[in-house]
Image (cartoon, rainbow, N blue to C red; front, side, top):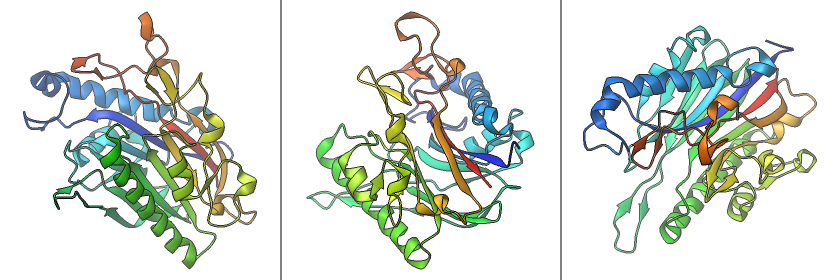
Length: 316
């Protein structure tokens, strides 16, 4: 590694269902073609991308990668044992949720770098006015040691805001559940290092995100239970992690607790960025420069994802 630098990344990998999916799955494209070859192509593409994230800064594979829109642990295992990542000695972690599309959040991590001490899904059950239950993706909580330093991870994929009335309540409940757990961790030890990363399905300046999670856009404003959101500074009309309504958006985010900025910390925050390399982009037509997607509607395009990864460099 270069100057003891390491990478923590997050990647929404767009409808990554396994080879053993059922015919009535939510896979957008052709079921039989997915099983025959398209799945293996996608594994190669995602593994290749992960291998490149943070490589320029660290000359190493990422230590930890959170993912969303994966069906099960089989997908994670195929990614992590792919030729592009096999030298990383990765392990996987995923709890299958009750999400109606059967997509989940998960984690791959280098066993030589990160030791899992505790993990659990945080499941939130919603009920409508008729007492009918509904679900969304679980929050994945992981406590471990990264290069012997204690660290807490939350991997999230929040519901879309398209169905405002129902999903807004779900989103608020998820924010409150995360904040409650964060407060419990910090109450026990104020200097604990916490990373919340995922697809928030909204911009970093969203009021609910800022207020419920108590985020700040400047490092110097982080002196207690606040969380630093570096994505605010990255947000631009020229750049983002995905396209929404023909505009660049930064729905994929990473938030950090005060523990990463203390002078005595042995695991320090360095920088956060969007991994938007040219090979992840369309190279022709009206969509030139946009994310090279696997599917557009039900049509197979054979790309990587409709999102770019985001990543953070830490020094240990």
